[in-house]
Length: 516
Image (cartoon, rainbow, N blue to C red; front, top):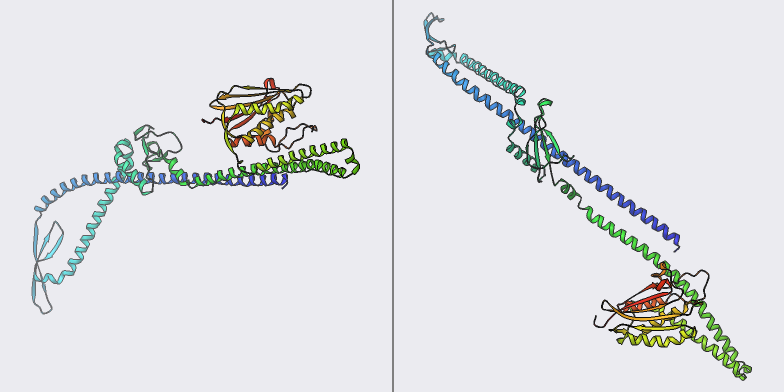
């Protein structure tokens, strides 16, 4: 896959993820806003209903007062009326009439002045019952009319009292705060708001006359006029505040928490995937370069050995001992070179496994380092250099694979020889010491050194420090990668530093002791 294609996919995925994240944030903000508005509307509706309940209570109070006062007045009126009725006289008279046969009849009648009713007292009065029913119905209608006029007057009087006298009273006389608290609780519970709340009552002068808790001056405080029909200058206010409103609203969008969690997981996976893709592409390019380089390097010794083998078939060459010895030496050298290249390939295959197969045994690091340094001294002296050892570690027993650790030390010393300075004699220093309960091994040279930005990269596979167009040192970028893998498989660590006075390079290996 081309690098441009990878970058295009990266941009598309980043745009899609950014759009998804934006939509989630926008959706959550809309839900929170709507939930807050619904909450405020519910509280306002409850406060309005409480205000109506207070008005009804006040109206009922005025009605009860007027009814009690009128009952007392009616009691006095009825007593006076009874005394008056006792002195009212009744008048009796006789009415005569002649029927069709000429017979004369008499009817005795009496009149009650107080009720203005005339009742027949003879047996003939049964014939006049229809007139009595009409009169009774008329009296009932008259009584209902009087009752209606009485009730109408009573209500008119209550209304006038409410209009002209109620708003003149202080709000603490008009409102029972305990009943107000009960009204608020009931209304909030009926509307599903089972939350703690604070409220205060503000009088017409703007002073707080009653308060149940600390109420901040924020937009979350809901205000409601207690008696809306009062004149604007006489109105009092109820202010309600819910301290846990934010938690209540946030609980309505708890479903967004797993959504955000999955989005974060998706983002991390996306970034990690990009990292793996670019890393694998880089390793693939390095491996291709390695294969191309290795193919070129393998062709040279193979072609040389093939040519030498053909020359040995010539009988004239076999007759010349010097030429035969030279050709045999070339074959031997190229065979060693080919063996070295094959070993590098085997080293590369080591990285494909999770962990190297180590044959661990107890060794003395001081003795091992001294033995490697003595063996390597011949090669160092060939280039006019020197190698010194400083064994300061008092506790140097380690549990390692002898072959791999020996290869690690040889690789570090071989790199020091490869990257020496031609104008300065090579100097190598090998040291051991104990620090923080572990063994420290350092190999320091005075070669060309490594730039600071490459000190950590030199341990990566196939990595070689850029040297422009100069390729005087052959290699595949596997030596130090092999060194780090072997050290880490021994539960140790290795780091590279610039040498003393920023001259040369210093490699420090840290290995656990047996007692650790």
